[in-house]
Image (cartoon, rainbow, N blue to C red; front, top):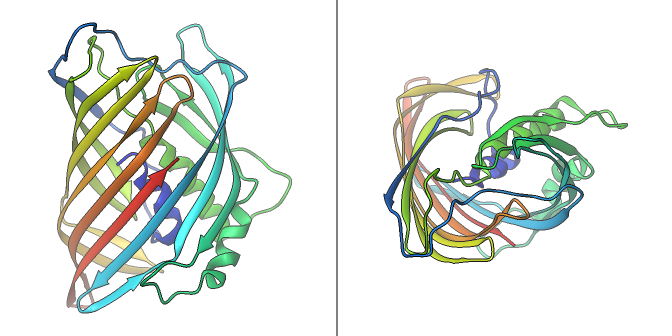
Length: 283
């Protein structure tokens, strides 16, 4: 789930709610795994830089109507500016590139959303990463170029999304074969959701943690705002499956995730079943 909010800025809806507070997390170790065991902690060295690419495919179904977007590819550079005495890392992430690519099954031409993506290039976000994976203080750094209200909103959503990008780590020492469960509240397309994620450690070598994960998603009935129109959202359920690798020395988690979210949306008394599916790859 840690990659989903970043995608939301590209197709998400507006919300009149204030920016979300740092997510509440609860990591419970289900199995400690095999020996040798060690405490997993992020330790990104000062001055280091890592470039990674985020690729997202979206498909939305509203009743009998299906719509798929082109593949959205965002390249980011993550750098560590400083490390505090408690191990917290001051990071900044710069959008190096953002583009759309033709995708089978999508009737939307990549060029039609180029104007939406182009202003994101060069935007830089600052944030603090704690050794246990908690992210705080995400913010857009002041830049030389002014941003339109629409792009500014997208940039702020991008900054807030970094609260979900890092993997929450257990405090207890673990080894290969370990399993832990995390409960987290997130903001997704203006909705407040709760995810319960189970992480299985498939490998542990030189600060790189291989994993698979499954998530259950649910949310209370709520109202969100789309283009100034209040929309009631009910019966929110979803799931996710993924696999990848957490690099504790770079702060970047690579891998793939499939997400499936269902709900009922009502506007002016008319209810429509909705389904949002996304395939997300970070490399």
